[in-house]
Amino acid sequence: MFISENKKKEFIEISDVIKVVQEENNYFFKIIIKYFTHDYDASMLFINYFETSHIRLHEILGNDYTCDKINNLLQDIFLITVKHSFFKDNYNIPLIYYNYKQVFYYNKIKTKIDELVEMNRFQDLIIEELLKYEKERHQKNICECGTDETCFNYEKTKELFKDFLDYYFVTNQKNYLNKDNRLLN
Ligand SMILES: [Zn+2]
Ligand SMILES: [Zn+2]
Image (cartoon, rainbow, N blue to C red; front, side, top):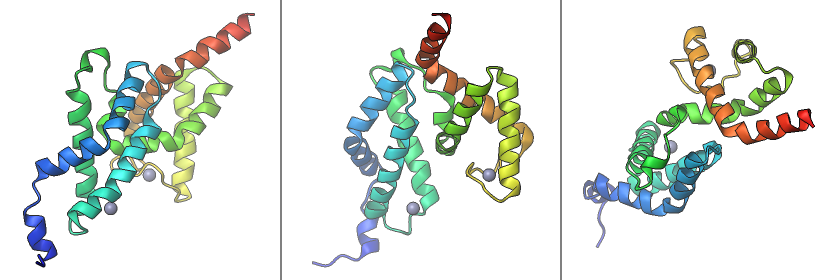
């Protein structure tokens, strides 16, 4: 029996889709939760989840379901999972994970943050340098922020970079302790 694509889609319940994504990413979600618990940088894992599941959802839902809708759905599934996990008391969800665009952006700009942190430790100065760097890139039409709201809004981007830096320092603490020890010895 041949059932047309659209007919088939009518029968797909969104709850089933959520379940499939959760099941297929069970392993990833577990590690991300572990990373949240131990303050490790989970951005790469999150992006992996996002990119593989995005393709997967096009297979399940078809191309009529837009990329934007898929991304929003993946964001929701992620939050449902990490907000209501049995281990939720052990971790806070870092701010940037409430908006997938920010995680992607953070991951792109992380090496630049690394570079700036190496050069000087003052938070305000790092943020100023980052803003300068991004402003110049946007002037050359290089945009990796991927977000219309911040592209390139000085105040909003500044707020965002504060969150980035907070996350950077939380997830790089151990490196810093080591470095300080090295300096002291
Ligand atoms: Zn897509
Ligand atoms: Zn941009």
